[in-house]
Image 1: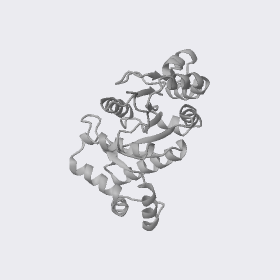
Image 2: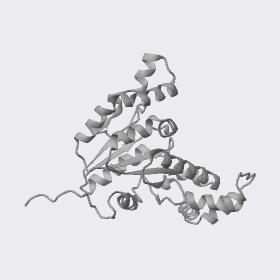
Image 3: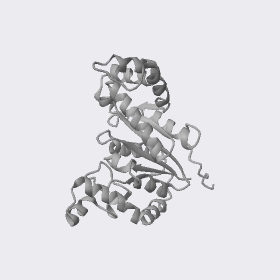
Image 4: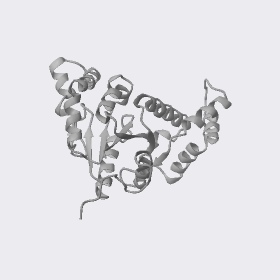
Length: 261
């Protein structure tokens, strides 16, 4: 059985680092896994990708050949992935790995919110079970209105990629424990988050207090796990949340047959 874990989030939220640490976590627990770099513009990676989209299309090479700027080249290269999707899919599935971690492009808005990105994911995943991990940058989420923005983006991404999703509150090692607890409290208590947003200086919202609370109750439906890519804190809980989506349990269960004695 092959499971796909799609790592999503805004630029700088820690997607690539989390992908690397998550693969190490799986391998440390004797779970076969590969990691796919799906960013045609990334220059350096903290891991050695098993499958690298840059072998098929490279945004920087495209810039040199066409004279496009960075954003134009990235858009064009992401669109060009579809031209190579069968070869890319064949390479991914040739590993017959239990877990496939997909590290999505840094500029998420150019991937998730264009037609190409979701099409690429659907082509790669096919009928396999999949789970998305959307990163909420804790250094950004300390301000309540920023947290609301991040939750809206997570919900929008979920609608676009159409896979079950959990959220990871990333970079918690950069915050005081009290701030992490405050963010988690706001996520677990929409009424508190609604009050905090309304109390912000110069708060001007298109929603009334009741409408905002109703919205937040819907946006906070995703399970959110605080994690640190530095210390590894939270990865047991993150794996358990992912596994509840993929296999319906928290054990290290892979649906693979036991080896013959």
